[in-house]
Image (cartoon, rainbow, N blue to C red; front, top):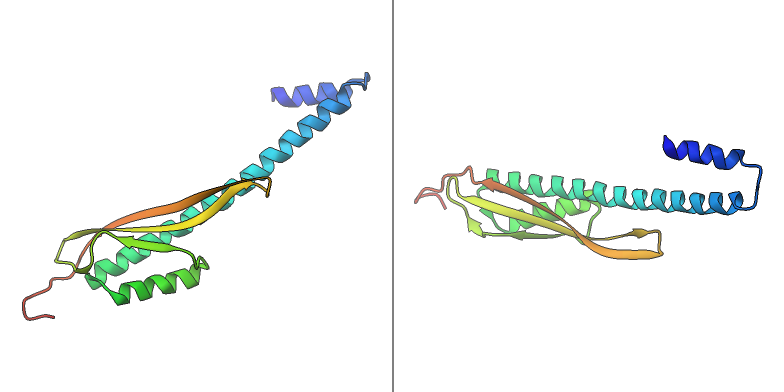
Length: 142
C-alpha cells in the first residue's frame, strides 16, 4: 500500500528530472522479481512432481515387498510419464523386504534456477519417501 502511494506520488510529480529514472529503476526491479518468481515456481512445480514420483515408487515397493528389476522398470515408467529422463533413484535397501521392514526411496533430478539466463544456479530437486513392506515372505514362498 505504501509503495503504491509512492508510485502515485512519482507519477504525479511534474518535476520530471528524477521521476523518469526512478520509474525506470522501479520497473527493472519489478521485472527482475517477476522473472525470479516464475523461475522459482518452475522449480517448486518440479519438486512437487518428483515428490509424487517418490511416493508412487514407495507404494509400489510396499505392495511388491521387493526391490529388484521390476522396481527399476516402474521407475523408468514414472520417468517417461513425467518427462524427467535425467531423474535418479536410490534405495536404502535391496532385495526382498520382510513384513513391516522399513525402507527409504530417494528420487533426485538436477535443475537450474536463475533469472532467465543471466544468473543460473544448478540445484538438485530431491524427494524422499519412506514405507514398510506389506508382504510376508514365508520359507516356502520364493
